[in-house]
Each structure stands twice: as C-alpha cells, then as structure tokens.
Image (cartoon, rainbow, N blue to C red; front, side, top):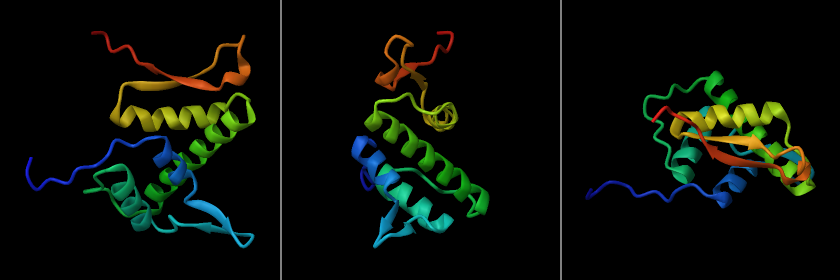
Length: 125
C-alpha cells in the first residue's frame, strides 16, 4: 500500500538489541526503556509494533521489562549451554501468543544443553 511504513520482520539482531536496552555504561545500569513512551517508541521503531491505543502506564512498561528480562534469560541460557528458566519460557510464550501460533518448548531431556525451539501450536485446523 502506497504511503504505508514498511517494517522488517523482527529477527535475532532485533531481539539482541531489545535485550541490550538494559545495559551497563561505565559500571552503572542504564535502562534505555526508562518510560513507557520510550519502550513503546522503541518497539514501534525496531519491531514494527503498532502501539496505537496502548496506554502509557506503569503496568504496560512492567510487562515490556518482564519480556525483556525473559529474552535475556533465554539468550544467557543459550550462551551458557543450559536449559532456560521455566518462568522465562512462560513469559516469552505469552508474548508469542499475541501475534503468532508459535510457542517455545524446552529441548528434549536427552539434549538438556540444546536450549529450546519454536513449535507451531495446534489450532484444530
């Protein structure tokens, strides 16, 4: 459609950039998503999320920060070769359910260091 913004599909780099919106600068923690508006603007600019109608509340920002923390846990688990925390998996799966029919599942017990993978949810079709 002419005049509509075109956004790239979020990818691994976008996920890493999202995780790194909380970082250390000169040994001090810095949160680049320190307000709900900053978080919504970042998600719009980098992930193409339409934030229209999303209230600027502390509850919304808290959900975004929980998602970022869960992504950080998944990233760290993959780097460290360990299974991710169950709470992080549940949090990411809640995020995924908003826009997809995908879900993260932990690796099989015979491959505990393999992390997790995306699977398509059964929708009855």
